Length: 332
Image 1 (spheres, rainbow, N blue to C red):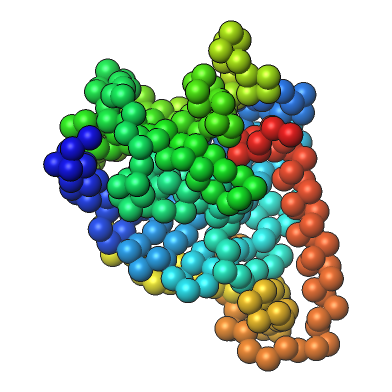
Image 2 (image 1 turned 90 degrees about the vertical axis):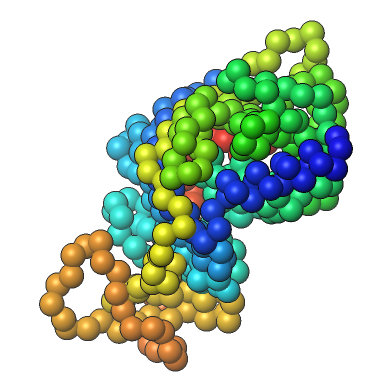
């Protein structure tokens, strides 16, 4: 690929990406897993915001479990530190703790950032696509939804114990990512047997940007994969963009949770747990989370932290049990 073509692609990407902020709402409809008897179809609602100042917010709600429960997560980043509101495993939407750390949701736990598609396609592991592209290997041209594409290979993305090869199809006209394929073994790349793919099914014009408002993520069974065996689908996730806004002003308060009375704040950065005292104030709506910014530790209340830890552990166990076979889990 000539220097001029690469320059054109980078210019296209710079024009398509938001410069100040993006607010994205999507709905995902996930099928049951073909490899897990416990799996059920799920509906996932995502509300995601980020800015050029590294501020981020992600509210994710999963419904459809056979027991009628839902999995709710809310993560925040003010640009320097992160927080996640932990919810009760059985009392719907009841916050039980706020956990402060340097980790935003599940960033890089599954070798990708916690960003919903289609926006996730603008990243290669932890790097922005526009930053990683100059070091990629050019592959023969491809086609997605009838549109010619430039195709690039990013080799050995991720930590030493989880290297993956990623292939990106970029629309030749706009350079918008239209397909991403993840290969967890080098030999799988040679026979075109990805572990998962994300692929646009439309390309739409929104506020001067080109956005795949509909797309499909597919997870495959790759155990004993070979050229002679046809790819077997494990599960699919149909993704629809409900709302997207570019470069709007978003208040800083959107990127840090307000604390609720008597909900402990677990500060993993400084190694302390703090309870705010209960205040005798007028009742607030149940979805409002407010309390004074934590200061020193009221030692008499630290015993409640053990209950909080137990509740969080129960929620994590429930999520793992009910979501087994979901996307992101690699085969043993």
